[in-house]
Length: 95
Image (cartoon, rainbow, N blue to C red):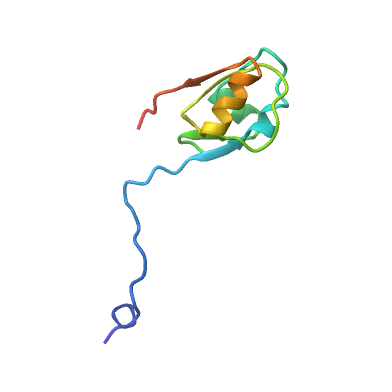
């Protein structure tokens, strides 16, 4: 019997999973106050390396207002961006 048939099959792999590139709020603090942070700006600074959807997570501190335009946000990240006086806008994915 071949090895791949003898070994147990474990877990479930979802073929429809959306893999996000992750950016933390602490990384966004490097942008100047009042600026617009979009996908092009994140790639230019080297915060996002690969293509695909981007998600902002709430790890870190944001002390000034920014307009952030990415595909998804965690609840805490969205609350902290709005509390700092900024705006969290959702960009529709192309795929």
